[in-house]
Length: 378
Ligand code: GDD
Ligand code: MN
Picture 1 (cartoon, protein in one colour):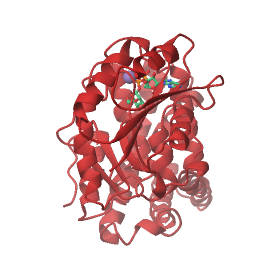
Picture 2 (tube, helix red, strand yellow):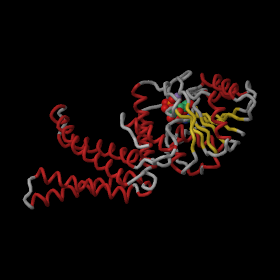
Picture 3 (cartoon, protein in one colour):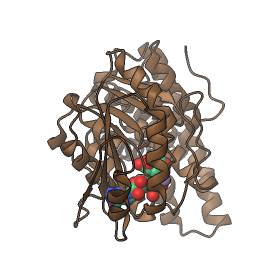
């Protein structure tokens, strides 16, 4: 297999030599090129150009004066410039060990996949190189949220946020990609259903220099998610909004009929929880029903969850208002938003999880991260 290795760089000068040296050793005897797509504001491009002549394989550097779409844009530019159909994307800071590339190539050469993803979260992989506990938590939560939003397309992928993967560019429409910021793999996977497999890897410490990840990158990632996934999520929100209104109308009607407000609220909630399930079943998750086991078990999970949520939300609200002195309306809004997000994740990852496939295991492992201690059906 001929290979183009695409390395996006932003001020990574001190890493260049070591990266090329380790790539050369790891891929000794293979045919490949290395394409750096550089947006640096320092002399990284010159360092790469100088290093190129010291290695026995082709090394090119494309320097962009305008860093359109950042890291993701650079990778797409790399796909365009690549001479090989198969492109390996990796970071320029050695957090992605070049020694893992041969295993990825060997997996791809079996011929039954469009992409091989190096995963920190597949069993055997590690994410030790993440800066600290906060970064680890952010990575875990955003991975779960992303998988909840694309339960099908990401079913075979435990690490949609990794920047280390080997792609058959013939399997994607490169010009249709709309990269925004850091998460190019998500863009690739969300556009088209690809045949995915993973190899675990150990996410290493940075060799030199500093990370370019910022809070702004995080916000950009959330926008990307919302744009890619407007469909299912907004339908889910619509059903939820409809349920909330129905709940109030029923409660109002029952009180008019002479019922006390507590039983009225209980009946209204029960009715909307059940209707809500059928709306989800036939509107929001219609395409996932056939693969996700029996309806009775989905019904039980969904209604139990919503019932518990209704019971738990009220005391949480009072703790926020009485204990933390959050204004009541703001506190109610916060609990509703949190409940909405958790409810969506629970339904997408657990209630409608595909059953009895290899994919189910991948979904289950992330679902377990969302709800520790929860066991799933085989
Ligand atoms: N061309 C270009 N343009 N490259 C960039 C830019 C940019 O605007 N921003 C960052 N890079 C390059 C860096 O130079 C590095 O080679 C690579 O992209 C990753 O950037 P880091 O600064 O090392 O970010 P990170 O370690 O936080 O993020 C990495 O880990 C994430 C998983 O936690 C990246 O691999 C992400 O893609 C990955 O999702
Ligand atoms: Mn890095």
